[in-house]
Length: 335
Picture: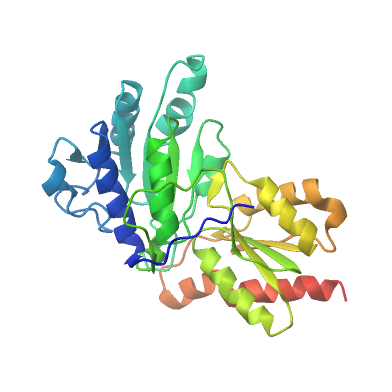
């Protein structure tokens, strides 16, 4: 199992870890540039590109029109002709505007050209609810892209992961979508100052345990750790795994955990029906069926658009209490 840990040297917020990764990568490689809505003068609406315009200038930090199809086409053309673009799509919801470029062009070009085309393109975007931005600015749509051959999808769970996965994504010669969760941008954690990579396709055992496995993505990793602490009072020793990379998925690490604990639950913020957790659950039962003492559980959002109302949105979102309740339900089913 991969257990990469951040050295306890300094703490920085998630948003600063992303900005630092961008700056250090751009100093390292002049072929890297960033393009997107409000990424230059404004430093992005989330602050992840703040300061880059002053250092690298308007040729490498580019404010674009509000035209996601055009922005994505720019990224594809630049990547295919030798540059290494980072395309910022302000909200993941807006990926719907440029799906043709992403799904039918970016994901397919290497295959269509017999492996001769190289598309080192990073798509950086923000997902998730919890900020009262309503139904068109709050979705978690990562499962869409995990379904498309030719795309890699990563979903950091904290500042350390945000920087290390971003470095790996930008250095990769294939298209990578980096999905950040808006509500954890202020989270602080230990992040090394130097550049480092977290390898794509390797999961991380965040919390070792012996009698239950929770596989969680993005913000749900932290919620699952809190759920594990709640469940400790029930005498349960819960293991929490962060896949870090959703596509490719590290089945081996997860299956090894389930063979040890004999029970599993998958937690994500996205709508439960058709979410990436369904695929993860399927792979667990395919590879570890004889080791399971109960069906694989799933926790996700209800099948409804994200509410604007703060009380309704709070009820909509999965959290530690809901994860712990589902674990108890699974265990109660065995009684």
